[in-house]
Amino acid sequence: MANGLKSAPIGVFDSGIGGLSVMAELLQTVPGEDIIYFGDTARVPYGTKSDRAIISFSREITRFLIRQGAKVIIIACNSASAAALPLLREEFDLPVFGVIEPGADAAARRTKNRRIGIIGTTATIHSRAYQRVLEKIAPDTQPFSRACPLFVPLVEEGMVDHPITWQTAEHYLLPVREAEVDTLILGCTHYPLLRAVIQDTMGAEVTLVDSARETARFVAAQLSERNLLNPSLSEGYRKYFLSDQSPNFQRVGSLFLDGFVNNLTVVDVESDTFRG
Ligand code: DGL
Image 1 (tube, rainbow, N blue to C red):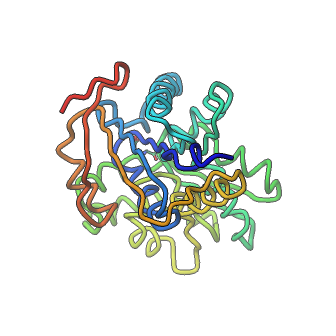
Image 2: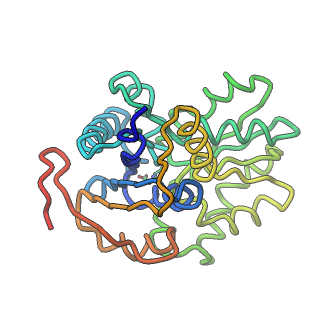
Image 3: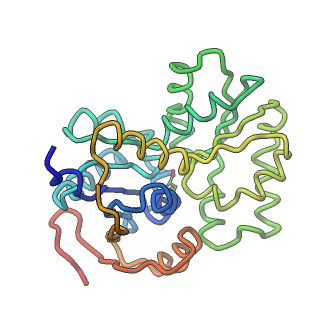
């Protein structure tokens, strides 16, 4: 294969800021790749929206990333992966990866008592997308799921170690703990930032599976298998596109990426008009 496609960028998208948790893992796992990130800050959150809306946004963004030259697409959002992954795979002829399969696969490999907890947004939990993958790859496992919708705004308010967050975690996670799961999937982009609270509330013996980290590993393996790894030895470029100017993006983004987010452009996703 010519280097052309190999050196094309990876397209990553999320409803907003949360996909930066996947981005942070990609920067560690495939540092030589060029990456274009799209955050749909104009329409965030997806976790409270219908499948129909999420599918239509995801389709639009995928088209945008393809126009920017992406060689593969990563849906770095659990709610969008749950609603739109099968359709995007059907409609576009480049590889499309989501966060659900890698997360479910890691949980199935790590659980010993075969009882797996899944937490995520309302859209992700209602979709049963994690359960469907588990039924396929590990039918002997028993999933217990719980939507934790308040976790996203708490992270976005920077309240990762606030008493209200500890109380909220206790409220949401009590039934999951009572189900005696030994493995818990963090099925939302924001939850890795609540790892300490969630681990403490669940108990040290419960293994937390970070879908973002598993996705980065999975994508690295897929790029190598498909002969799509960028051969460049230098660090790739990163470009960030947003559908709306978001005052939160820099502030919360730095929590995810551990540093300032540079190279940010606001764009009209339908017309590709750059808005400064
Ligand atoms: N990125 C979303 C997810 O992983 C969380 C934020 C939202 O609801 O849009 O499900």
